[in-house]
Image 1 (cartoon, rainbow, N blue to C red):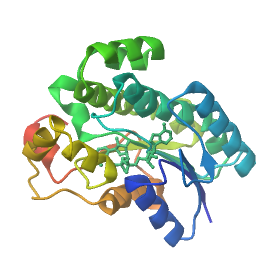
Image 2 (image 1 turned 90 degrees about the horizontal axis):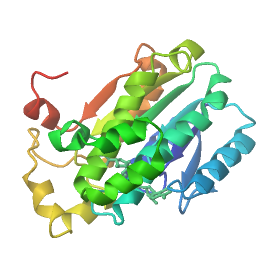
Image 3 (image 1 turned 120 degrees about the horizontal axis):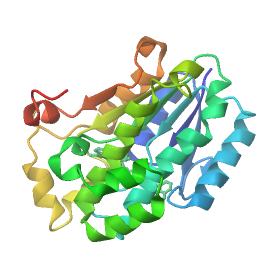
Length: 255
Ligand code: NAI
């Protein structure tokens, strides 16, 4: 039985991931604002360090899998909180729990990015501020952007951090497989809040999905649990798009 930490486990993709793992017999430790084994606000430095300490206590410093899924959507204000949770919350848990992962036999971690991360408007100075580790600067930049560019930038930074670090000394060479999924629109409470928003709703509905419809949380969870599993034992630094074909449609020649 593997021990797996899932952030954002109370809802949507995180909850579907939890269900799949538990069905397979794994022991899931959820981290969320509510309905989880560990209650923590991952948008704040204090919440992140409390969560990391609580996981270390619960796992005795040995963790088989980590899924950093907690996130909020482009309609969430203030926009500075989007970058604090979606990038810095995810990054802090990946780095903070890396020693516990390294102590396991065949550990793996999965970050949840987004297919919005490849859109041209995701490319802003926010990405560099995130990758430089400057949360204050990133939060200030977010306040000059809009929710969508902040969201997409936070997810681009997370995917880029995975690409830069997965093959390196701290991850691959330490025996930890690090990968990401880039979901497209999947019908969860997060997406529903966007659809209900007067500005973001029409934009989301106009986004083309070649396979026809929104995805389900379980379709994204299937990709996450694949990347965690031994079936993906040669995957390292992959960004797995699970988006009904949107990214391939918009960027056929870029991969
Ligand atoms: P959701 O809203 O259903 O679930 C998000 C979970 O994160 C909730 O349980 C919530 O309580 C938790 N959370 C929110 N703020 C938190 C905080 N400060 N600290 C700790 N936990 C917090 O959302 P969904 O759709 O399942 O999203 C999961 C991830 O997937 C997010 O990172 C999101 O950006 C990403 N994603 C979702 C897409 C979609 O269409 N649903 C598309 C692309 C990416």
